[in-house]
Image 1 (cartoon, rainbow, N blue to C red):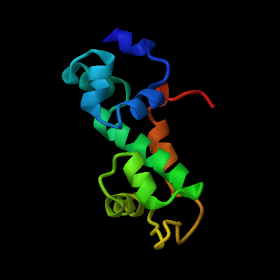
Image 2: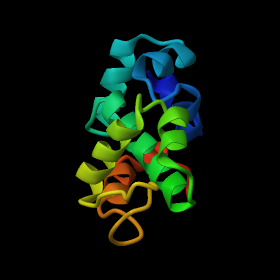
Image 3: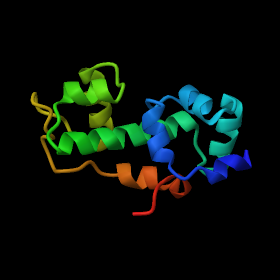
Image 4: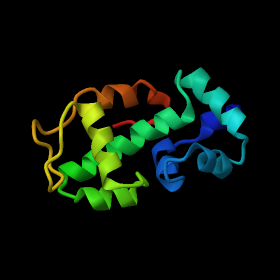
Length: 125
């Protein structure tokens, strides 16, 4: 599992795996169990929890850039625009208007701090 410590771009791997823990394990050529143990040790969460947070962060960036919610949902594998809107609202305490724009504030609260709790996996910015 120490080979996972050498991975330098977890965010890019998350995108390539379409935010799916099984696909991430396959891309790394390790078992799902090995990946889960490593994530528990390093991040204190499951791989899928971390992937879901990273996916939501990417989605929020796209929404703030003006990308329609249907496009965001399709590109980031949310299943449907309504599912994405529900996840966005739960995470940010905000609702999206019919055009996919946040109704209050520019950016949801708390998402960055939750993703950043696992700093070893994120690029230095």
